[in-house]
Amino acid sequence: MNIQIYDNLSELNEAFTDWIKELLEEKGKLTISLSGGSTPKSLFDYWSKHHKEDIDWSSIYLFWGDERAVAPTDSESNYKMTKDHLLDNVAIPEKNIFRIKGENDPEEEANRYSSVLEEELELKNNIPSFDIIILGMGDDGHTASIFPYEINLWDDSRHCVVGTHPDSGQKRVSLTGTAINNADNVAFLVTGAGKAEKVKEIVGGAGGDEMKYPAARVEPTSGNLFWFMDKEAAKLLM
Ligand code: 6PG
Image (cartoon, rainbow, N blue to C red):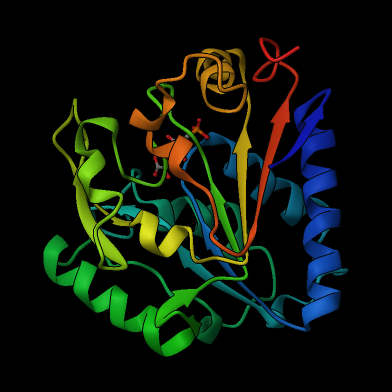
């Protein structure tokens, strides 16, 4: 596990971008799975402001790790967040964008998106393999849209399943642990003091009981795992 801790969000965004640019240079193109949440929103704003020109957006292929069962115009849509904060601002071709269709029946969409991943990504062990999966971690230890109370979905053999938000009951299409752990690189972006307790348990291995959290089960079988954090999120590690 590679742990990177930064003083603030802009330093984190800058370092994360340098890392992506290096990988892009190495590979020539990148398949990236995005997450929802507040940290990516800040990253997308940063890219729109500072990296419109020096990243070859036509070599970036975007997918999502999870999506809420809402229309792409809904304020809760992860696609809409990305469109508003990134896609509308950089020269990324439409054909490079593979969204999860939140407006479809969730179970059918999980199957459809699994097929999209099989067609568009390199297969490793017969499972689609992303170059990079960006993940957030919820205060409850969830990641993508696999929640602790549905931990059985983590090991589901499908690439995508339907998770249900524990409070709102909202359905969400999500990658499984099977797909997540088959990536070349998985990068958590975690910021804010609200995450510190779970970071201590999961990254610091403090409790011994952390495998109940989906975020603790992220362990790419033959890839790399990165935790990019600000010092607030990491404060109980030190
Ligand atoms: C979503 C997510 C989810 C998110 C975490 C962290 O669609 O809600 O993909 O897993 O990444 O809840 O969110 P923050 O970055 O806002 O803390």
